[in-house]
Image 1 (tube, rainbow over the protein chains, first blue to last red):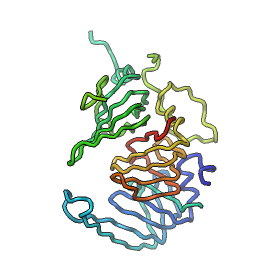
Image 2 (tube, rainbow over the protein chains, first blue to last red):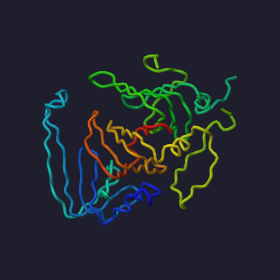
Image 3 (cartoon, rainbow over the protein chains, first blue to last red):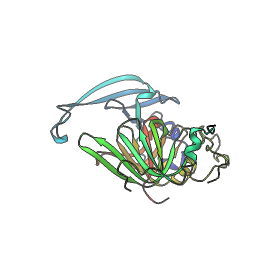
Image 4 (spheres, one colour):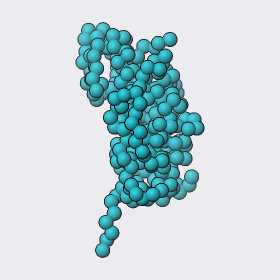
Length: 95
Length: 86
Length: 102
């Protein structure tokens, strides 16, 4: 279990180097890619990345069920992510 | 002569009492103040969170909570909050 | 509560360099005390966006960066994601609330 070997939150990221990680970003963006590098700001270098962008169409006052969510996807070979946009990073589950 | 008292000294005197916390956004908290630090991160107990939304106010009850000082706007000592309840 | 120290000393804002943090005397009820009490417990982490993460608090640092285990993401009361482990960048955190007795 990862929890046995982590003393600080960044250990979770260190243990995910060279692994595929899920990254949730501000602006309803999500990334999945191989983590190559990170720093204390959570600037990231990812490769083989798929970006998912959620675009909610329709009026703001529409019922949640009636809003149309458009999902756009695109792929990037290599990507730098600026740390201040990062909300969450999830390593691959170690079952 | 006005006594010289630092703002955070006033908050220190509230430890153990209920306090009303108004955030920068549409959010407020009430609870018993257990402690705080130099960043005014606050530990509260028996907390109610009030969130103003277009659909009306959402109230959430919480146990012991560490509130990030980053988004705090105002503190009202000794108050039980927007409704005067809880 | 004594007035000897009107302002609590700053919490451990730097990550500990060794396995055991230095024994810093802090008043009861300070943010540091709270965090010592909730590590390993179930917590609710609410972000300023209103999204909640419920899970077991593995650890955190002075920036309120958080590592959570067995995490559920809740948006408007619905579970929208599950993560085995999750790192949450501290600047997004509104509060950390105990979800069980501490």
